[in-house]
Image (cartoon, rainbow, N blue to C red; front, side, top):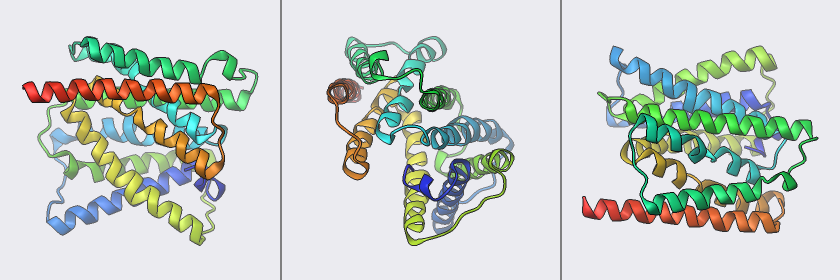
Length: 274
């Protein structure tokens, strides 16, 4: 995404990748003869995911990346457990095992190390805006997790997701047109490669996978398990873009990894005894 922003404005980048992701899923389902027209009962979940898991967070993340390093921003986006924790307890009635609590504490501790006041310049207005965008996007993802878990599904998620992504694309087109004006995209081989990855793979496949996991694991586990994403984000950002490894980043990565491991082991134990 960070590389793509060198060729396309943020909201039009988000719009294009969501559109390509939706097309790839429609094509995949067409090959299997599984495309459907959503029913009336599917409309609420279509809107929920289109807004809170696709258009709003995607637009904010792409815009925030203009002012932040991708490795650090990936961590801030996936502070999802900070928002999911109270939601899951009070809305879904989930209980926290000691192992999950320990994992949550470790994960949040890693985030605190990476984004402590001493490591962030609050006088940098652009960086502050980028961080705020990432926090709002993480809250939006967390809300989507809770609402997806509460929804009574009548249609398999994979058959609804391309419609959700296409509806999210419509919302993004409206936002991009209003904020950035008409698209001005100059296609080139690097941009084609970036979109080929961000569309079918990083949008189509991963959004389907994430919604599916949200349905089949406790909300807390889904959110905290997602903290594995910034681990890869920081490593990739260092290798590709030269983002530095500081002591705080190394310590934060270690704590986040411990948190993910703790929650994964707890879910594995639960699946074996159920």
